[in-house]
Image: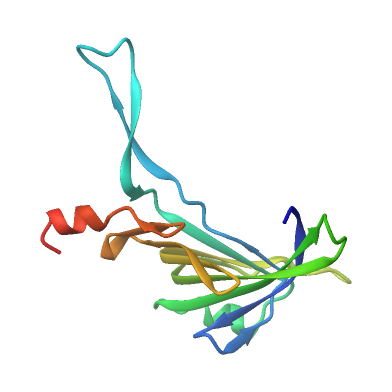
Length: 172
């Protein structure tokens, strides 16, 4: 059934899966694989070899309209368990109906930066927090699609854990 992904209808942010945190915007972590340039005999130039399941450091950014108690609590130097739950709008091109897909982003984060923003009359403060991510998972309609856990050698994408053989070779 052909569908067109349209937009995020809305989203909510939770800590420890149950405490709602109000905010206006989140920038999700980018998953960027480590790579090493390969050169030498038998290769006509340079080639980048992407290291299986190894990634650059990930970062989450949460933007708040004003300085809130939740923003300050997220600045506590400890591991925070964050859920970002989104309702995504999809158009079914055969029926013409608008459908909703549930997207859930699960993260373990530690604060790197807290910015209380600015003060100006009749405007948002634009407070924000930046967080180091040590775990990231993405679920669509309840099905796990992505799980990135560098500390436990897990690199799961679309039904396959690409580091399973690496864990086995390392005796894990």
